[in-house]
Image (cartoon, rainbow, N blue to C red; front, side, top):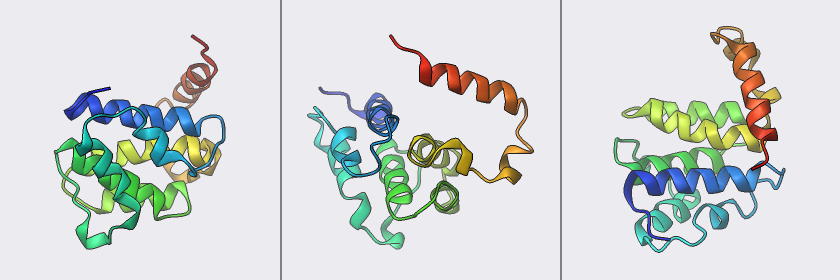
Length: 140
């Protein structure tokens, strides 16, 4: 599969989510996220994430940096809250990095692990929760 750039980022994140949703845990996540990628840039950005130091993580508008930062944030922490806080604390393109990280942290840790103080201020939280349940249950 050759999907460089933004579409490659979307494919990698969604392959990661597909791996995590059945409750597989983080073991095998990297392999699942880069499965069938021919674009070595995407593979490298994701596979090197767990082994790099905080000062080497770049959060910017470039999708490969965002992928690297999201996988680093997820795989170097032990909770959804810590992963997302680490991601947005990187600065720069914090919203995108946080969104990528949250997309992976949700199925890894479960929605029930998100802090109530975050959910209490979420506009339309009940509706969003219902949509999420329907999406996960959707069988194509």
